[in-house]
Image (cartoon, rainbow, N blue to C red; front, top):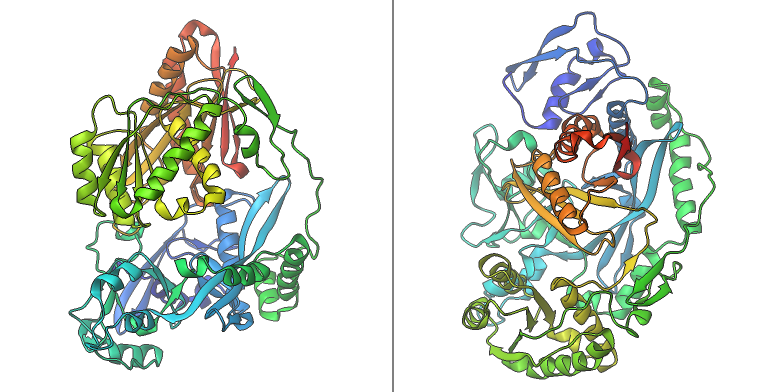
Length: 617
């Protein structure tokens, strides 16, 4: 007390009492792991923050066994501390070696090599799972991009073009190794603008970067970038202040569309970033050798009496049984080595075909040729698939959201089965506007295709085939099925979406199969509080899914397999305590009491799956 939100400041306040808590400790900002108990179950300490007294209260909560899920979370925090001690820089969730960066001056790109790591319990032991990762940065700042779009005569930038290029992009700031999403551009303020620091004192952006990071800003007239920042659970009830960034200090990340189309750029990056198993193993061995030889790292591990094996974990591999794909009356192999069976799907009717009788094609004036070519190709590929396709109503539009929605309002009716929109470019606002109208205001299956993808005659038939397949699925048809080997089994998937930018409500998605072929699915969304991962409305969702299954099959499933994504190590037990009882309660309410069945729950935490088998008592 008072409450301090900044995790680094909280750690510094605790470290003022290092002599009391001991050198061997792990603190994540709110919970503290010690290898020993403190003398009292509740201890109060006093720290100083810029001459302000801050009271810290440490209260004993629980004792952890070495393989408890919570303990694994602390091991991961400890390993991140080790990576920092090895001078690796944290960017997002992963760590990168800035010293071993590779520069591609021809392409103006820099690659930082790094690692994705996770400590997890594997069968009988705790293991480190690691893989090689890369961070791709451009040798171009947001300021370079802005100045490149300036009019040579007026020396003023095209605000609309700058916004199009920058908004939505991720930028990287070298002074603190952080990434930010650009949400807007502030043309009214510049680096000479003053802002209030956390202590209340006012300072200009120029002076702030000079004092805080010893970095000079040269152009004092450049606009500022606005990032709304990332959502934090501890801040969900506090007013949200956007972050202002100076373009000159923001490096662009990822590849531009122009780079993606450049064969030489993609070839050079692939040679460096796509590692074969031998090179990947060599890089990971380098990581382990550094851990074994770094004195500071070894000292940290010895404090906890932990050590890593010098060898990789060796285990027997298993080749899965080859899956046969059934399409209509035909069956063929999935070619597991290539995972591609698209050629076979073109030579026969689909599993469940929907005829295309009433449909619209919308196209911009200049893309009439692309739309006509697509229609001709669809006429050639649909008969083989068994799709009966009538003439589409061709509608010309201008290249705006308003034009598309106006035409749709005038021509979409209750008979319309499909709307196919040809788009002149990959404009996000155009695509979002069309989809919002056709999903929310006037629910109609739709398919969007960018005109550029229809320009290559040699690939047009393949693209037309895939578009026809997608439209068939969206209208309720099915392409093919596989034999799972399980009889009367329902599959469920659950995940949560968190809007970390706008911090709106979180949305839980629930999908479940409603037929034995796994070609028809029930879906439902549950709106939750911002950042809430554990789902509250599962009982209602599962009951509705089971009733729909029963309606389609005339009986209830014998087994239910749930795939649950998006849960961190520290939330596993809470998930078991909160979501599993909802599922069990739903099963008890739907299955007749005299059916002689009871839910038997088994969890496979490593692959985020849980099985509910209904067995006779």
